[in-house]
Length: 99
Image 1 (cartoon, rainbow, N blue to C red):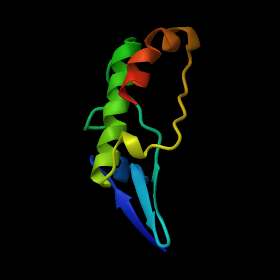
Image 2 (cartoon, rainbow, N blue to C red; image 1 turned 180 degrees about the horizontal axis):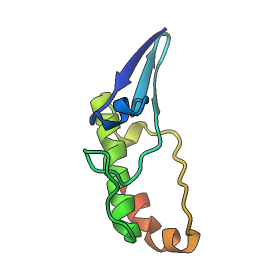
Image 3 (cartoon, one colour; image 1 turned 180 degrees about the vertical axis):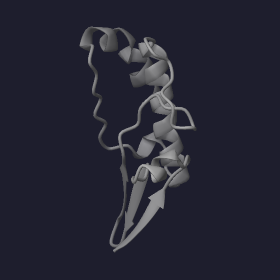
Image 4 (tube, one colour; image 1 turned 90 degrees about the vertical axis):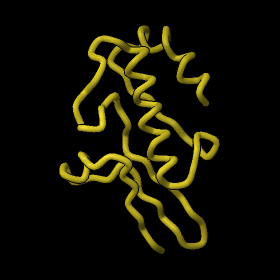
């Protein structure tokens, strides 16, 4: 088994984690860390704008997948966490549309 770090941006490495890890051997699996509305510099973006936060989180997810030679078509599972379910559901179609 071989593990390969995937970091399209590097701020997370300074915090002690990788954006993703490809595990290769019999199969090839990418485990992606939680992606949020963070800029390339590791700073939060779009405070109070759920639609923009969802879009940037999806952009960040796609960047990790791309860096590993994958796309959203390779996604098997996606968990979404929020503090405001009603607000999330109002904008969820934009995320689902990308899938």
